[in-house]
Amino acid sequence: MQQDTLAIHSEYQKESQTTMNIPILMSTAYNFGTTDFAASSFNLEQGTDNVYTRVGNPTNAMLEKRIAALEGGSGALATSSGMSSIFYSILNIAQAGDNIISSNQLYGGTITLFTQTLKKLGIKVKFFDVEKPEEIESLVDEDTKCVFFETISNPSIDLPDFEKIVQVANKFNLLTIVDNTVASPTLCQPLLLGVDIVVHSASKYINGQGSAIGGLIVERENLVEKIKGNFRYNFFNEPEPSYKGLIFSDCPATPILFTFRARMVLLRDTGGCLSPFNSWIFIQGLETLSIRMKKHSDNALKIALWLEEQEIVKKVNYPFLKSSKSYDLAKKYFKDGASGLISFEVENLETAKTILDNVKVFSIVANIGDSKSIINHSASTTHNQLSLEELEKAGISEGLIRLSIGIENCNDLISDLQQAFQLAKK
Ligand code: PLP
Image (tube, protein in one colour):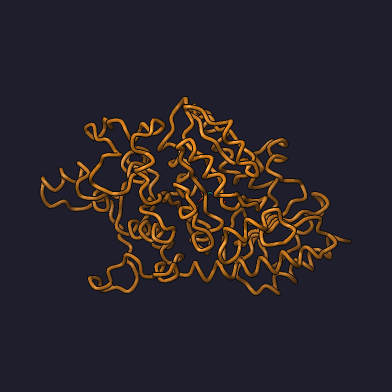
């Protein structure tokens, strides 16, 4: 089946159900029936959907199976937010004394997680220039656990060279983790490009209407081959005391590995689970994801081309512009467009403020991926906790404006920007 069909039909056994739409199963816990069944559930012999909703829930399981199908992965885990999915993907492999290697172009929240919170937990993050994957090589040591990067960096709107990054990481048998929030599986499937783990903020394009927060972790097929016996991943290869000495990479209960451990250890112990109600919202979102991504991308390209012609605009960042340094990578790795994010630079903070304060259709909001168009001043909002040096490294000037282009009529969006530009010119 093709992706747009999978997004609507996969995993739902309509023959055995009476509802066309997937039901929301709001239950904290499940009736085991017998003591033997209860005991075997706790021994991880019965799957994880019907034990306790902190570690699994049937509605969440539908979302997990669908995102796994759309990403071309083998399994997934739903979490309470995009940030918790990123946090868990790291905690699942690293502890105090370890380090990870990360792209220098990241969402602001991920930068603070990496530079502040992980540091306090004793996990060091070494950054590489995402345009120079060869830098990874000199950063790897015995305690390195993964290479982390984003499909489309926000707000610089750059693309990574997947193949090159994966190649260097594989040389050291290192896991690669990609935040695929901005592209979504409709536009890019990193697991099929050799990446090991994908994380998502489902709060963005998967949701599509800015109505709920959630996160997802997806693992590729046959990840066990890379993890089993790999000295870097002792959490999976040494006996787990809390499951009577179970070795995760030998666990016969499930063919999935990374998300299984994240669920059975991290969700169990730290509880960042997704509400089944939010899962249901994301399941609705997935059904229309492919048509929305096409409209977001078409609108964004038209607006980016228009912005390039405006005198007030110094520079426009959008991967499918011929002027973009990511143009060749966009053609190579992106199927149907490059999503809805554009950033552009104007002369200074004053000009940026006048534009933001005068748009009428766009809203000033700290979000992306909504059906409604959003305008944002990155330096003072999403990346506000960064030092001047970090802002410069992330390519964020005071005049940088980020647009998250929605699915409204493109001409209305252009007219809105045009009237705000006019006021800024005065
Ligand atoms: N990853 C990216 C690329 C994001 O843009 C965001 C939020 O803006 C996140 C992760 C964090 O997601 P959430 O807000 O769901 O925690």
